[in-house]
Length: 262
Ligand code: BJW
Ligand code: ZN
Image 1 (cartoon, rainbow, N blue to C red):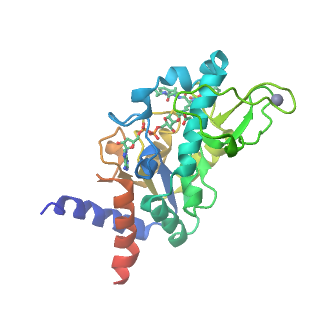
Image 2 (image 1 turned 60 degrees about the vertical axis):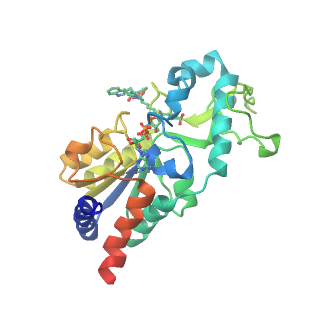
Image 3 (image 1 turned 135 degrees about the vertical axis):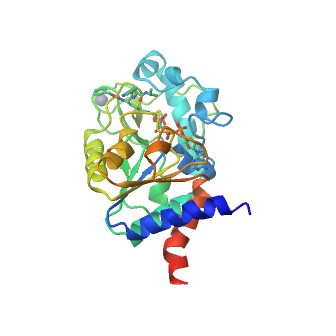
């Protein structure tokens, strides 16, 4: 009995995905939750429950205390390196194989989509693995992992840029900073021309990224949302699949391609 409310939306979503020719997958932190990477805003486990976003995820915070911010991101980079892609990441890669040309847009700064086999995700908010100079923007190598993992909250002075000696910063997009223009342009273009957008594990609160599913819906694409909780995107979603990405996405792929064949 319990599975009935899930089954019908899953069938509807499978029908939409099975017919779609131009697909966009748009992911947020919930995508990686079951890999053990914390989300930002979840009530008990989100990073912002334990850390002050203004003290860590802004350019002002980095200027005020580079070692605090660098140490926090090094701690997260190590945690992501230990994490493994979950069945949801693998299901996204499977969709990309089944529907060639599928564009994957992620707000995540981890590399779990790449490690699950997704070629070339569009990283709207940058990456934990692409540090650069805070002065001249020259790309810098990630620190040698042999140096060891900083403890949660430990200050680690950032390395200096090889060209201008300014502190190296994490290659992520902080509040108040512009998104990488090429990534944003690719994302808007893909959302504008898709016939189906699958949004997974995002609260839909952070702009301009949150506009991506809205653009797709406005231009007539069907939107499917995968999220255990309600979000501001519920209203534009033709189907809301309430559940964890690592469970729902493999079930969706099975319903379209395995179930259909069997
Ligand atoms: C599961 C699950 C499971 C759990 N399975 N699901 C318009 C209106 C209002 C404000 C603004 C606006 N436009 C711009 C702003 C300001 C600001 C903003 O949006 N603020 C809002 C918070 C109010 N935006 C910016 O500052 C952006 N820049 C900008 O606009 O620049 C303008 C400019 C132009 C030109 C020149 C200069 C400036 C930049 C935003 C950068 C965001 N950065 C972060 C940090 C990245 C680095 C880091 O990792 O530390 O990006 S913030 C954080 O939020 C991170 C995420 O990518 C982003 C989105 O979060 P996400 O992924 O949605 O995670 P959560 O935690 O919010 O949600 C998780 C969801 O998963 C939940 O719904 C759960 O239910 C679900 N879930 N388990 C499936 N197993
Ligand atoms: Zn430099």
